[in-house]
Amino acid sequence: WMDSLPRVYDTPIHWSESTLAELQYRPMMEAVALQSRIWKQQYDTLATASPTIFASKLSYDDFVWGCETARSRAFSGAYSGSAFNPIPYATVGICVAAYLGLGIGTIEQAANGAALVVCGSILKDFVLPKLLKVQKYVICPLIDMANHVGVGATGNVAFEYFSDGFSLAALEPGVTQGSEMFIQYGPRNNDQLLQYYGFVEGDNVHDVYILPPIREWDIAALEEACGRKVGPGRLEKLDRAGLLGRVTKFDPSPTETDAANDIGGVVLTRATGIDPAVIQALRALMSSDAEWEDSGEAIGNFAIEVSMENERAARMAVRKAMEMELDGKATTMEEDENLLKVLRAKGGVDAEDILPVVFRLEKKKLLREAINTMF
Image (cartoon, rainbow, N blue to C red; front, side):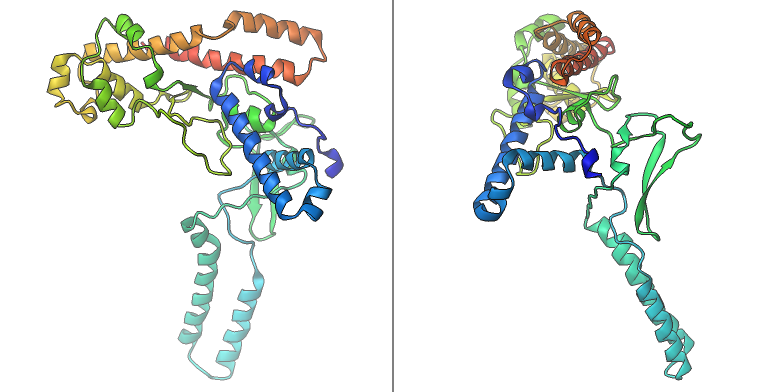
């Protein structure tokens, strides 16, 4: 199994800054920089604590290889308890038999004692892990080689409680002989898939796009697109409500290395579209004086549509912001598609050359879809 593992990973943490810039997506670039910084800090901490044992035997490159192997192959599931252990039940059976055989007590008393043990076992294996939100991760050889698909998985991984092992079983209607069995790693967006697994999924139903926070949007351009002016008091109220995004970055936890949104950017998903809180903010931002007064100057009163005109202005504003984001890219979708054809026709092209183009094209497709569906 060890020999079958890749010796080198084609993930962005190994890319140069110029290649990362080819992603044309700031959140991903920041996430990779954060990942690199945290892993280096963790290695340095371990090396300082044990210079003669750890640092002398494990280089930083080997440490990163281990982190990537674990991060891309470990999985968890809904069940986080332990495997079935027959010893407590056998012990209870013997004790009950002795209890009754020696005439120590009644059968009801013995049953109550047995029920207490059974309930304790259920509590330990099924209830407490849920309440305490215990999450266990495992690396299981062979199962870890199954590839991911966002929709239409043909295999399912499960923990077998009574046999203390993991199984990979085909889902109905099954997998034809000679074809590959796919599983789902979870609702992974392309940021996560590229950063930790080294691939991008086309038309990923779980993909996201993180736009700049509203405070960075061109308000004058929004006013022109909507035909409305932003009245006094709106921006201040939105800022106090935390709907404009943050001015400064937050301090991430030492283990959080996923795609960065540390300044409160506007989140767009393929599944649900723009975050409803953003539409609410833009209803308030682009409200007329009459609409603002009718709401009592309260942002919460814009949680639902207040008028057809206001709703149109809010949606025009977010559409304009997405159009400006798309137009601000260094290359167009058509240029990316043509470049991708050229790279694939060459053959033997390094992943570092082709993956940034595939990734940024998928992000632009998501933006374009959202723009087209805004009205």
